[in-house]
Image (cartoon, rainbow, N blue to C red; front, side):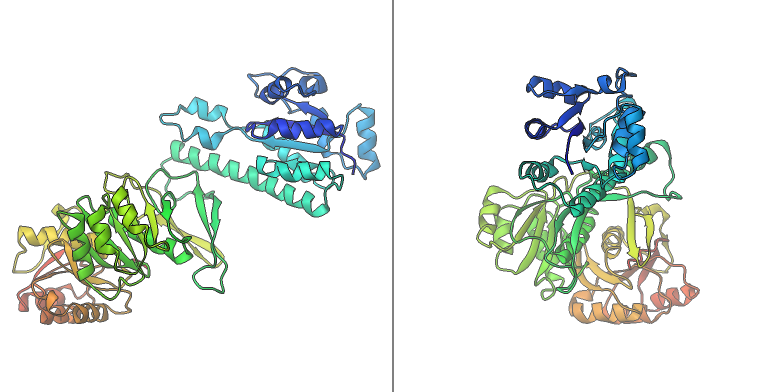
Length: 516
């Protein structure tokens, strides 16, 4: 296939001059538009202005440039169809063999602080997607280039005289369709967020971009990759965290890291969360970060091995030295001091993630999207917290002010433990956690068995109501002094009676926190 004519119209000018120079030297005639033409002219590269091809000037502030039959007929004509080529000849239209086009920077525009909707709308490309789709449709005869990262391949194909394979034509066309689909999806999502209050749209549109390919997925026999949802979120999260050192993150590291970060967001005072297999095994808030770590670790000294630790304040040398003897996969914090970084630097495989803004007032929003075979489940993120004024004391014994404060801490922790879940706290530190069980009494038994004497005088939180009194009986036998749970069971009276018999205060929060 002889390449005679290329149309270049790009927003991202990266590598443009080099590519166009290769075209020119290869004898490929260049058609260009607007800002692209200005760059070529400045570089001394010959081109034909799009207006000279169409016979019309660019108009409507540049909104209309390439939307013309002369342009699109030249792109869409199938070379093997005699009638197509006869039509071009009749109307004196030259075929276009290469289309180089990338789109207005809509994604970059919406990231600007306080951007006006008028500027956003002006950065919705019309002619560009039409050019790209036309070229991709006629992929057998037209090479479509949508990304500067593809330029080296194009340059090699032209300068080596080997041309381009059918597989290259197909792949470039597929990348073109992906490019326009992603572009339209970002527009749809952005305008949906600005023009509607609809939480669960009838036809949602989501797109993403690969961040990295993992060595494997949850298990070595599974392939896996990490993708970022677009448009990018501004909220601190696992996706926007910056890795400072250590081995590449694994699939499971990212899942656990996400759990750690979302849990630590519940607290503003110095706090530590330890995660193992996507569920907390220790959580604490204290006057210092070092004490928070010690308290969280004391919950379960066995489970943190190979775990993930998250902090909501800067990690200093003291904390780093305290953590250094332990085998941990990942440590997450809003910042690491220079001294802390030096301490951790001795453990080359330890992954450090900087997640800025943790510990500050964070606006949390968005959807929780989970996959099932053949579909998705979409819900609001579980970020609402039932205010204490809505809580109801249901037992004869009343909780103290200190008990209520511990209950709030406990509820903020238990919502992050896999259901069925219960946990026990003293002050603002967990002393035992039981989760991921098929019955609540089993979760209670596991937690009390692991917590042993630490359960005495503790506060218990349950992620859902007690279907029977047995869970309360087990907790009471271990020495719990107060319980907070959602309530709502048909056996609530039986459960309340059990608490009264054991002299335990009980509060109904009215809010369930299942986590599957």
